Amino acid sequence: MVRDSARRDESNATGASKRQTATFSTADRAAVEPTAALVAVVVVGLALGLYAGAFGDAAPDDDRSAARAALDRVEETVTVGGVVDPNRMRRVEAPGTATAIELEADGERWLAASGPDAPGPPEVRSPDAVAVAERRVTVRVAPGRNVRGTLRAVVWR
Image 1 (cartoon, rainbow, N blue to C red):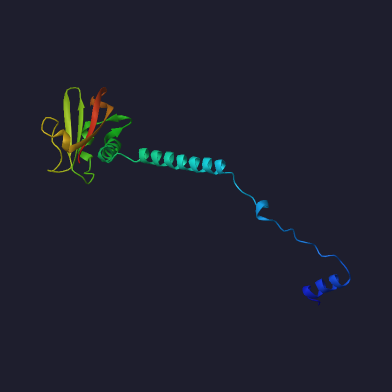
Image 2 (tube, rainbow, N blue to C red):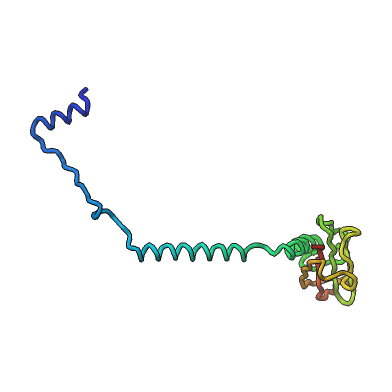
């Protein structure tokens, strides 16, 4: 078997012409116009700014997110067929933080608290110390009688 270097020597010996490589001067090299480069930098900067702004707006609100999460968990527990049953308020588990769950409908109020540190009724609690999330729901007040009411989760901040 003949090596490649030997074959190259043979082709040179027979008078075959060598392929010449083109040489480029620095003026022939690719370059970017200064205005195009400046536009590209501005576009990338704007894109990063928009991304950072959208990312900041997408972050959950810490004060309200705990209350909304508690409200979502409780609503699943107390709702049967899309109607809140006040008797199921006894099944509400403490979500880990000092939380009070309130259900108001037809002039009545039902409360479920996570413990002695839970926020009290609206007349007693400080509005600055709690985060509140509430939702309008349908409440069963008697067999076959449903009314509109409010399900509320109150969480200490």
